[in-house]
Length: 548
Image (cartoon, rainbow, N blue to C red; front, side):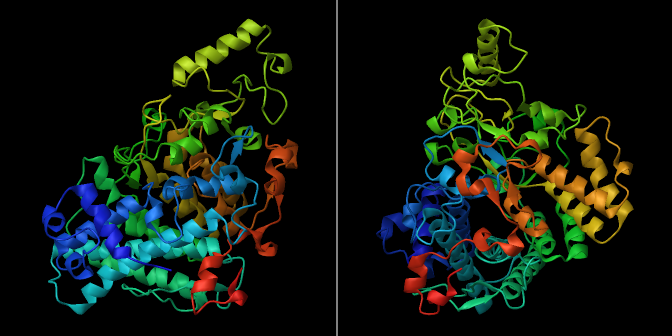
């Protein structure tokens, strides 16, 4: 099922970097050999640039199993919050399958775009990383500092892709039996026909992730450092990214000491953002906290396939205009008034949408006592549009967010995708220390982040493991809202979805359907993605009995 992977990525890299024009001059674009692509460190850098772009590019049609309805991590990053109910749809909308995923009628279908495209995109990353790793093993290219950097990135990419696959297509490490639960197939080939092994166990896949990321860290030690100062630089993986991935891997394995230590290493050079940066829209990798992110180039016209089309209430698309994304009301109620993150969720925004799923849209259905006349109601709608830059066609809704805002609000311009921040690393360290019973160490990990965000923050209130874990869950839900972590968090914590509990989230049962309530992952295999039926049919090492 994996065809022309290296060829495709080299073509992408050449188009992106406008380097090595001699390839285009001397060979047709369908005849670039893997030997050329792997002939030198300089050429391998083109493969890496292709991988950077593959993370977010719109033309996923180049990939086996791909089509134009997904643009890589534009879709996969926010999916974690969409699927787990963290971001809430306020109305029905044109959605590219986005609401199908929220309704739990996509990831559990073996023929859906979601199951197919995540699978094939991640395996393309693996196969391309294999090409570099396997070439390095031959020993024909001197391992100078530049080549070490390239090998480190390849191992990091492979660990990243396997972690993504095992977290979606297998049972959670901490809620199942990782020694025997089926994981995903291991693929080490770098040439067609890319035949994989049968499904390895969950533990074997996590062990491979850890082995790869340790190899990456070893290669990065003594490698050329990542440049700084340009948004594109953060697209490159470096030793800090590798430590961050190691922290994620270990956290989800319950290897608490390893997770805490790796998180500390990852965040060293990335200071916590202040309020001005936090309020700037989360639209650039140049923010000081960003350890890793995709710098989305302006020629990559993702438009209505972009992260900001799916997430940002300022993007000019019908899915946004008709369907402002809102925060869970129960989470909002927990945010202290002294915490400036609260200001990015507009509790009292008028409900201007007469098609809102709660049936309270428009002045005639207004229930907010702040607006005593229709003039006041309309004036606030106009004021919010002037402050945040959306158009007169955009609807507003109580609890709508303004955390993710495109740089040019009211347009369809592309923006960067943030993949890893230092705040996540503080929270990983805190959770790991709490799980180890190290109360003071967990408090110390939380303190810098909490005190920056909340002027009245007092970490000493959380003086037991149980209190700490409840607070860490709150902090992750708030700090990382919309950044895609809730799905894997719920699996790790073995928590279900219940939009009706405790006064309700604000989601509509009629809109959310099966996604309105789901039992916890340890007793509910609906959390596990189906393997694409195309892969079951084509892979000689998989059969009907391997389907989740």
